[in-house]
Image (tube, rainbow over all chains, first blue to last red; front, top):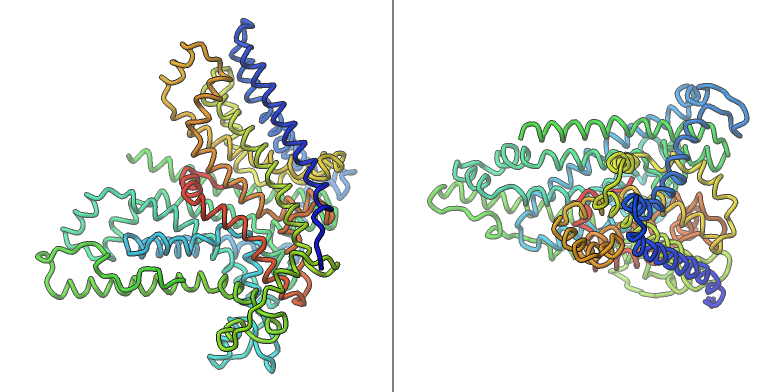
Length: 328
Length: 309
């Protein structure tokens, strides 16, 4: 029962050494760059490379090369030894399990952005200029600081299930019983479990939506609001004719950002159901294929699919926002 | 908690002009603000109850947690810190041993944040204030990398870093991965801030004979401290809360962070309820402190487009 800190000290030293080494190297680089201007031609280019070089090398090694390599691997078999064309991709779209996983991903991607933006917007409008606005916003915003693993545990307690003859320990089942219903196994019945997990992500992302949209609402020029009020607009008209058109770009950005985050949902599924009970999603399947089944080909193909699905969303955002600036 | 949210506050709503509406419209407006308050309180309650429930549970004795709901606590309050004690300091195989994982999380997060923030700041400086051929193209490239899901990099990167598993006490791979994945967002955010610094500052520095490196240290860094703070908080929260990269790039109890350990405990089919409750809160302490004390910078960063893929 007693924890011995001295065993863990050994882990801290390498970290300190690496950090010290890093500081020394960067310091030396700065020193060299300081005396460099006296060295004549091409100096600006050298300077720039000194500042940019380290990041550029890391980006190439850690992102660019792996990116190309993943696309390449997706056309190969599990251990990358033989070329199999588009078989990995056909597998994604013909196998029952993967089709189910794609359907679940679709549920997530449709529901989470809509609900998060909806709740975030509703709350931002409701508490705008109200008493205690700061605290009210913090309450919704706080889940953003929590890890998705932590959030899944919080909700695991809400969804907890006990047999009908026992006392319930999960709030939701207790509420069901108070209402005269029967306890449900929320997280282990498909397709309901996907939606109960969607609730968790909405719970987290609504805070993000609320903060961005609240800032957008506050940026609406006071004259416009005042003019609409003098014309006798009621709150409903006020929202649809004044607020909504003014904050449209922010709504687009929020929806797109949440959509992309939702496409990559992994932690919640892994912690809540472990991908069982027909609840798998794209990013979870990618992890399982690549790092549990050690199938680099299928894992890569799933990663590429994820990337391909992100692109239209980003293009939509770019077009929406450009359209907006043209109107101005 | 939620009682602090605005309750019935009709006068806090928009000021109505007494002469424009009649009695009827004033009543209607008052009702509207009241409905607004009630709806916002309901939402705030729904958003807080789950966390509150877990917090109450974490303070209850093991047997109570497993047999009755946390709401019964208010009828028969029995409080204990045993769950925290056991999950943090316990050393048996089944207990959380979270103290050790807590240190792992710190050892992963602090260096990775230092590396990515410094390198991103340097790169952003070159891309925003130094002139060289191909600058715009490189910036567009870095910008585009932001949309690449990190899943695209995992498989080859793991193969590459497999040779360095001993480095940095087993933490090298995870530092490397987090640093790389944080760079596109960092460069983009900091570039935007640096590009808005007045040109005259740099002219003046040049006239005074300061080289780019000195300008960077003496002028740029002090001026973009708020932006650096925003990005540092992002990186910190993101790395501390990350599960995927930790799963892929660390192995064994010697280097895995809190999130991985908690996910493990959550996977044991509900026998560990008492450890889960307190464990979840232990993992939340640091991010909540960082978040609550530096919320201003966090929000500012979010508004500047700081969302990580």
